Each structure stands twice: as structure tokens, then as C-alpha cells.
Image (cartoon, rainbow, N blue to C red):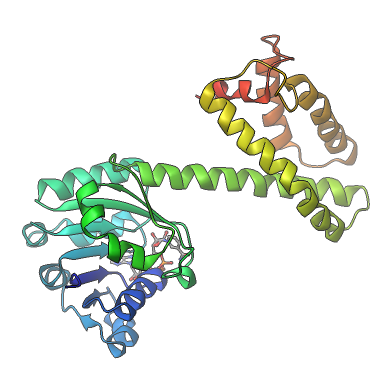
Length: 291
Ligand code: NAD
């Protein structure tokens, strides 16, 4: 029989989660600070919980999706709520840091409930699709027991590890890689336009260059994982070769008066490594400087 679910928070994401669960036949309770936001879900068959405590008591699985952990704490860490949690599975889908996940796991488990921390790698319109990825860490038992429900929210769901902070850490790590690319594109567009290129040309050439960039990225991760920092026959480009090409970015910024805050920060990292006379080393040899 399908588990009874309570979704705390019916914002954009919480509503999409509740809609998907209702669509898959899960008996679903919803609660939101502004009750009117539950109307459209009630019309789809959701039961509106009169209070957080009522919602939790009615459910086997409690999914939390509010703005942040401060809002989540305000809901959960109250007299009456803690005792209602015993024996439940709590799935925290509010975005947070690894530390917040660790603290939450301790608190939830101390009140007799199982805890899974989740990171949603998608926007609300993707919830319930086969390709949608949600990352979970924390109780393996909760993950195993409620796998069908968790996979209903996204077919690309995966369990990252037992340490509660691991899903959040992976989320941050993946976003960090994305921000590197997006900030790089901002700098690249400035360089291109300063020399009279239009951004359509820049865009067209991004796709042609992408396989090379992807190969370098995976090679960097594999080499770092194996701690193969010394340059060898498989090295794609030595630190010295990278640094030589990097000078052209510094020169373009200087000559065209472009903002160079980010290239200067990158230059400092290059120089730290090169001061150790590592010109021939692989680009992956920069990895220890980040630890
Ligand atoms: P939203 O603004 O649409 O909804 C926020 C929800 O939090 C509302 O239900 C609101 O009533 C509730 N809330 C805010 N403060 C509260 C408080 N003090 N007490 C009780 N309830 C409170 O935001 P959203 O887009 O639905 O995002 C919800 C969570 O999901 C966030 O942690 C967000 O980072 C995460 N998330 C969102 C997306 C996305 O694309 N929207 C993607 C991944 C993760």
C-alpha cells in the first residue's frame, strides 16, 4: 500500500512535489503557512492539514520544502511536533548546507524518526520526470523503504551516502563547477565584444569547443582522483602551456580596460604553483592548492 505523505510547504516546489505524489496515487496531506496556497492541491485530491502537527501525525513520510532551514526549524522545533515525529521518515528537501543537514539529522533522529536530506537538481516543472535528478544522503533504511516514492519525484534519483551532509555537498560541488563556467562566459563575452566580435559568433563556437572542454574537465577529475599530478605522456596541456595561453587573457583585459578581478585571482593560483617550479606538471597539480 502507498505510504501516506505530508508535504510541509506549498510554494512552487512543494506544490509540484504534492501534485506529482497525488498523480502517482499517494494519499497526500499538505500544509502551508498561507492556507489559500493549498486550494489548487485540494482540488486535485490533497487533504489540507489544519496544523503542522496534524499533517505529521497523519503521515508515514514527512516531506519538508520551505524557503530555508530557519523556516523549517520554525515549523518543526516546537512543543508537540517533536513527539509527533517518532517512527516517521523525514525527507528534508529544503535547500541547505552540509552543516545544516548534519544538525537536522541529529535532531530528527533524537526524536525517534529516520532522516534523509535531499537536494533537488531541477526546477519545479521537472519534478516527476524520468530524467530528473534528486540527490539523497542520510538514513539508508529510509531511502530503501521509500524508494518508489522518492523515484516518483524524479527518475534520476540517487543515494549519495550515509553522512547527512553529502547530498548538499555534492549539490554545492556541482553548482560550483557550473558557476565557474558561467562566470568564465561573462569574462569571455567581454573579451569577444571588446575586439568587435558579436555574441552570436561566441555562442556558435561554444558548441564546437565543448567536447574539448568536457574531455579536459573529466581528465582533471580523474587525474586528481588518482593524484597523478606529474606531467606525463597523457597530459593534455602542461601547467606552463596553460599559463602561457592565460597571459593573453590578462593582456586583453589590460589593453581594453576590462574588469580583471577574476583573471587576477586565477593568476595568483597559477603563480603559487609555478613558484614551486611545476611548469611541466599537469593542470591537475593545482588541486592541492584548493585544500
Ligand atoms: P517559494 O518561494 O515558491 O516557496 C517557499 C515556501 O516556503 C512557501 O510555501 C512559503 O509559505 C514557505 N515559507 C517561507 N517562510 C516560511 C516560514 N517562516 N514558515 C513557514 N513557511 C515558510 O520557493 P520554492 O521555489 O518553492 O523553493 C522552496 C525550497 O526548494 C527552497 O529551499 C529552494 O531553495 C528549494 N529549491 C527550489 C528550486 C526551484 O527551482 N524553485 C530548485 C531546487 C531547490
